[in-house]
Image (cartoon, rainbow, N blue to C red):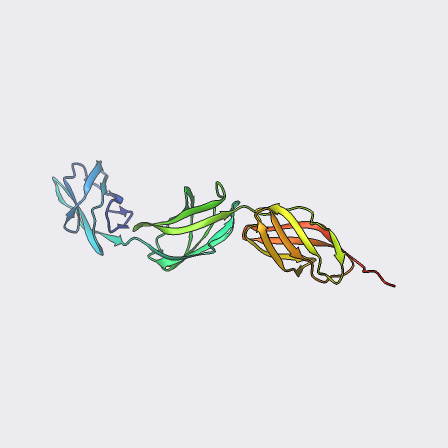
Length: 247
């Protein structure tokens, strides 16, 4: 006589189906010493709502013909989430987030706001999940659902990917030192600016402007790349190194 699922929340409320024979007219289903609420019953199955409990209990079905053999049911506590890393990513989703805590081994879903994803469980204390595409930039609550219930308390921030336009001025000496203004969008979380792969000092003016100082470089045009927590944006050949005057 199978029972499915064979585990559920210590708080009760899990829908459990017991299958077998001679089950019609069931008058009681016990989870240990507690009665479950019968919601459906046929000759081959009984569906109930599990009561609250803890540990492992025996489940029996009582009909006018007697009481069945016992089946084991395992009560699982609600999960506890300790950390989430990273805590932000692009609105398009697709990056992997790791969640640590306890009671995660039976995790079946992770929700980012109203969006749900299926996790990969590494152990009772860790799981990873691919972030779904967000509805908009901003913070959303993160919840983990396990056989023991759902736990909230963490947040994740969706960040729009950056865009940049032509730097101004768009040229300067190979010795570097040119103050350059880079226009764009979603630049508030800028983490680095490079000219031809060489890091440049920078200051975020606002969400649409970054000011940088060109580092020393070689003659010719180089790409300007701005990296934010939402990704990176490239202006191909955006800055040209020119030779200084000679006499």
